[in-house]
Image (cartoon, rainbow, N blue to C red; front, side, top):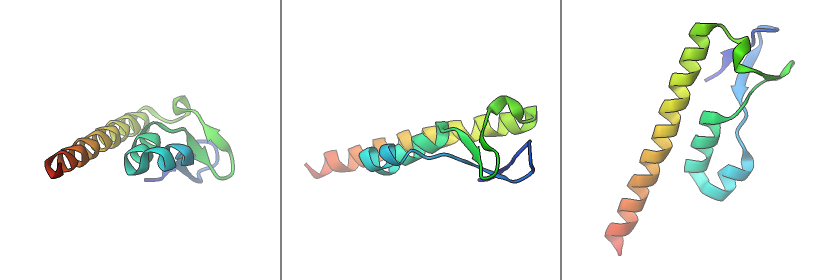
Length: 85
């Protein structure tokens, strides 16, 4: 899910925390990606305020969906583990 850099027009991707991914697995990676900073390969970190309003609303919607997906995945995993006990 790459966005276009408002500075140079290059691809912008979310910066995923490796520590959260290692510590919390797939759920940590999803939540970290949902709320991580945005980085351009050429320009570095890009603030949300630099993007046009329609792109910011799409980013917010996608962040919420990824965060909810991480929570749902966690709940499903816990319920399967609880049934096995």
